[in-house]
Image (cartoon, rainbow, N blue to C red; front, side, top):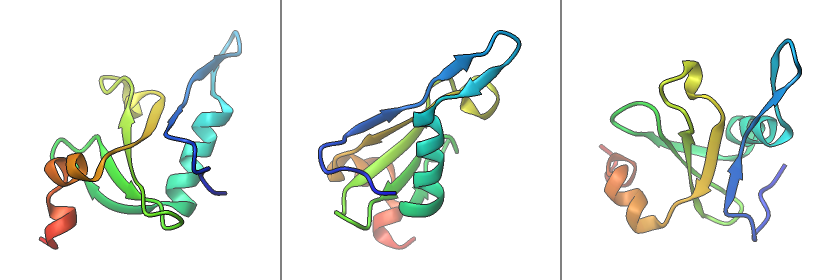
Length: 97
């Protein structure tokens, strides 16, 4: 599974099944991408945000929880992050520290 070159953001959502909530297809896709396709580079100091690199095109992606106060952060948001911003927020990923 690859990210398309024109994709810049993926947002997961809950599906209300009446008696339960389920992850939508985007949520499942994000989970597969971070498990199988993207290279994990760093985790933020607060432990909630994660930096990834797409080996196919070199773009940096940031995984952030939409509702960090909830268990597991709620639905995920996977978005392209500019290299300059990634270096600011995740300096250890670029210094080897």
